[in-house]
Structures are given as structure tokens and as C-alpha cells.
Length: 94
Image (cartoon, rainbow, N blue to C red; front, side):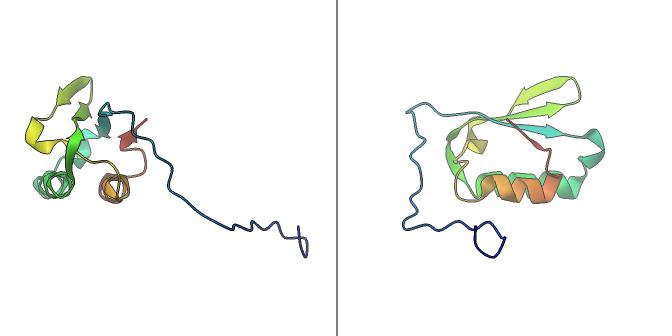
């Protein structure tokens, strides 16, 4: 604490290695009201811009759909942020 303000001082920052050798699924919850042609088209573009090994699951109401393998993604490098911008903060299910 300095000047009554909490501060963090960092000497080094490293990205943690979170890979376990197993592809983690990316699960998205899509509100049915968000399923416009434009939104679906942009979601496809975003997924195709981040190819990888992780399968993508979509929750559409009570249904859970697994997208075809050509939509498998690498969920690092900004993908989750882009999806949240497009679909909202609650779109990515933990």
C-alpha cells in the first residue's frame, strides 16, 4: 500500500502453461434471440480464424450441439474475448 492505494509490483510476467495434452471443449451458450444470420455468420468467421484441437459445443435452449471438426478451435489468443464481444459476457460457459 502506498498513498492509501493498493499497488502490485511485478518483476516478471510469464504465461502459464495450461496444456494437458487433451483438447478442452469450448462450450457456448447462445440465446435463441441472438441467432440472426449476421451473428451466426460472424461466429463462424471467428471460429475459423482460430483453428485448433478443441471441439466447440453450442447450448441452444435445452439442446446441446457439437459443431463439426472443421470448427475446432485453439481457445487461446483472444478467441474467448472475441466471442464475448459478439455474444455477450455469459456466452462462454465454464
